[in-house]
Image 1 (cartoon, rainbow, N blue to C red):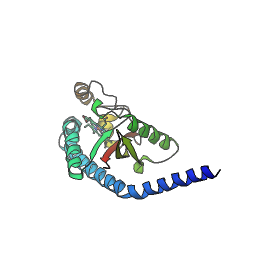
Image 2 (image 1 turned 180 degrees about the vertical axis):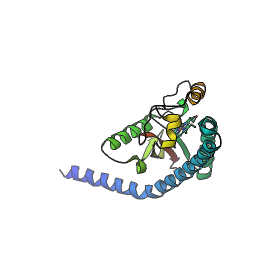
Image 3 (image 1 turned 45 degrees about the vertical axis):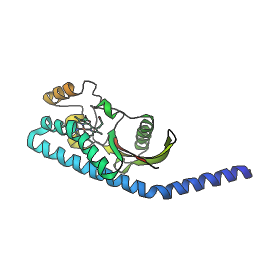
Image 4 (image 1 turned 90 degrees about the vertical axis):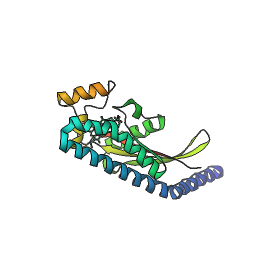
Length: 187
Ligand code: HEC
């Protein structure tokens, strides 16, 4: 009994210190997501206005990974996007990301809104401590042009050509389209 209590106390204090330690890391992750999302959305909206979804595909295809690299360099971390149903197989989740994405779906099924959904954890990989963070990305109206169930034929044809393994179609408003994902070395 005493041992259990001791263990419990240890776990609680570890949990507590993680929460304290991780506060600035969570704040930095949120800030990086904000910069990445704002830049990406800015480019997307600009391209949609000037040339419609056909031209905007170029933004998502070329600029999304480029902006991710820029923000990663600026912020000293690694940021990207992932999903349970990817368009670009290069964005496929690793085991940890898949687990978090599944838990996001479960949280949504229990009634939580995806708009503020996030998760972070201090993990160990090959003996290195790493801070990992994910934030859900809800599907909005504009997204349906390229991720919905009813995609214009010319857009679908271009997506077919660029992404023969595309799984990222058939989404509805409010669905979790995927998540921003961040990793940061703790050493
Ligand atoms: C003009 C077409 C277009 C629109 C509109 C669009 N996307 Fe995408 N989306 C793409 C393309 C193309 C990719 C693949 C990018 C790459 O190669 O990394 C992509 C990739 C993604 C990914 C990365 C995971 C994956 O599937 O590879 C997420 C997350 C995503 N989009 C979310 C959204 C959200 C949320 C919206 C609405 C705000 C949106 N997209 C609007 C075309 C679009």
